[in-house]
Image 1 (cartoon, rainbow, N blue to C red):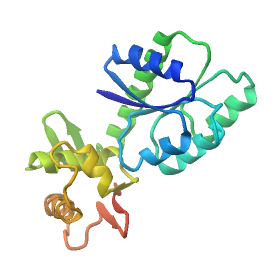
Image 2 (cartoon, rainbow, N blue to C red; image 1 turned 90 degrees about the vertical axis):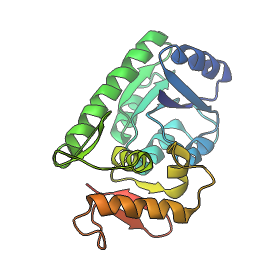
Image 3 (cartoon, one colour; image 1 turned 180 degrees about the horizontal axis):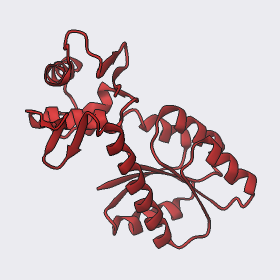
Image 4 (cartoon, helix red, strand yellow; image 1 turned 30 degrees about the vertical axis):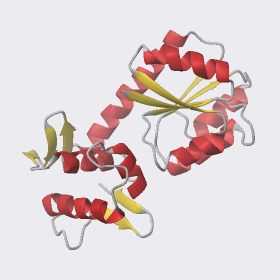
Amino acid sequence: MIKILLIEDDLEISDLLGQYLGRFGMEVIAYAHPQAALNSLSIESYDVVLLDLTLPDIDGLDVCRLLRQRSDIPIIISSARSDLTDKVIALELGADDYLPKPYEPRELVARIQSLLRRISGKTIQACSEMFRVDETGIYKEGQLLPLTRAEFEVLALLIKHHHQIVTRDFIANNVESIQWESSERSIDVLISRIRQKIEPNPKHPTLIRSVRGMGYQFTL
């Protein structure tokens, strides 16, 4: 299921979008306050951010900038602000699309689906020289890796968020095979097992880098 982070302070719009997008296999996690939404990025994995510009406490353009500093997650701006300057600034800050309000909800669905197809293609292309992920498993240089289910889910998560720092809490909350109460040590052991299977020299890993006090980073 596609998971949407909706940052929107109009609760009626949030409810309507949640119901409508749910018909297309999309789960909407809505936040009215942008700081709470930003904080959720450390424990939840989202496929797309749908961001309003008129928000309490932090302007939507600043939220866009903060989102892009933390992640390369796709961002769609949805706003009633009609100033062309806002649109230009949003795109310069790293937004992937800009959809003025009001709009037909079906157009939003089409834009989300189109954006995800483009992003997915870029991710596959970026990893294709060494790694390939599909429903059958993860391949390194064309060879299927002998991974357990938990190893597969963790490595796929790291590849999906390549070049981003992934915390242990993030892993525990987004890998079905790991219980949320799992200790940091158990996650570290799992990472060590993955390194044994993908690193040229597991004692000096170059693909999965440890970030002291934070977590891990897939550096391909």
